[in-house]
Length: 323
Length: 256
Image 1 (cartoon, helix red, strand yellow):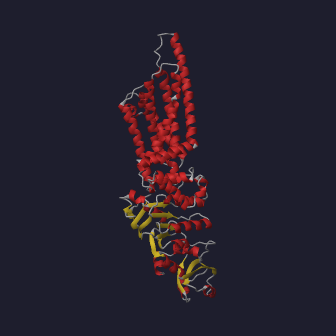
Image 2 (cartoon, chains in turn yellow, red):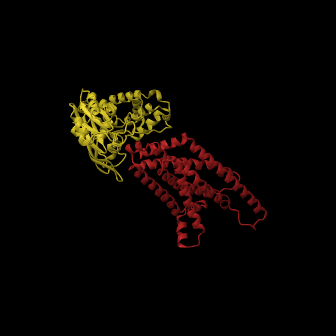
Image 3 (cartoon, chains in turn blue, cyan):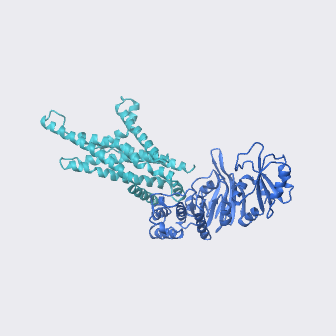
């Protein structure tokens, strides 16, 4: 349904995305995963025809986004990262206008409008002005807007961004309900969200595709190891090699750029140690560091939410190596 | 074409539900009413004089006495009023990030720019029609050159198309409505001043060119009851020029 080939976008001298290629099959939910600034929004804006690419091609629903843009756009529903709303309209007025822009008229428009209001649970908010809706409802309205012309493809840019946990759960439930009826490409920087919603994940890193994987494999890969963050005051030169002598350690990555907590003192360094699944090597690592007087300042397990940091730290070669 | 009307309808609706259009109309109408009253009073004094000194004064001419000053002043008021009507059209789309809705929908940029232009023109036309009440009142008391009035209104309407084109262009440049309004007024003042230079300059090539390019001189022809093809084409092509420039800016916005 979506085929992206060697897509590149440059803003002046800055390359936002660099020759990325991936495909989304009909009926699939694919997650576009990566830290902020990885090129997720740029990719999506090109796929929806909001922005032309510098080079490369994007084929959506069988239509090329450059030569058959109008046809291609008919296939797509798009929820941008910042939900585009007209604050002075009511919910039905907003949806009616956007439906009309998509070519719906008369009874078909009314029917489509009522259907998405019902599907997205906006019935109670019917009389409110868009600007008076809560963030959660505004996000739902954004989703409703993308559904009004029953597109075969949905492109959702951070659909749960800025929502509280309850609203996030509701939004995820809505997206799960949409699966099957639509092919969905969604972006997120939250790993558990991708694993919860998507069948496959495309990981973007600094404008390049770092990995494309099925959800099970990705989850397995991530769960195959435990990760610990270590901060040392006086590390030896070959600290990575020394850590690797501990049985069960898979890899050691420098985390110099990861400035969590206090500013690093001179000579201080941070490391992320990847261990075999199910093994708690905290004690062994602590013992090693203390015995050799490396100035152990911090030792903590890396929780799931910090996986994102891990992704940011590992460059593509290393993440290939850990597969 | 159909989407053009969808956009135009929404923009008209937006004008009617926001206070800006009403406030601007109220200000415009009261200024015009005040100007009209002043000029009409002056005209009646002049005609009294004319009755007293029969023949020794130039002939009484309602076009010269009433229309020219009122319509020239009205045009100058429009320089400040029209950008206030158009400032929202694109700036607000940019600020609310709703451009993406328009760009991702299967509609052309021509329909977006055209729809917004048509909406502004409709509102402007209604505004002009409201001012018709003044000559209608005056018509009760005097023999009135209605065809000359129609010509003057046609001129004012065409002038409005140019002004709306400029205002629309100014609105595409920024996400701040106020900046759009000031930019629009600035461009229109320059257009207006070109005319004044053309009027006052001695006969040189430059002055002749400026005269041909002058919005106010072409407009003056309409006010005096002269509908010339060149003036008609001048106004239409000038508004088309500004719309094309607005189109280019909107298209360029896609690349950002």
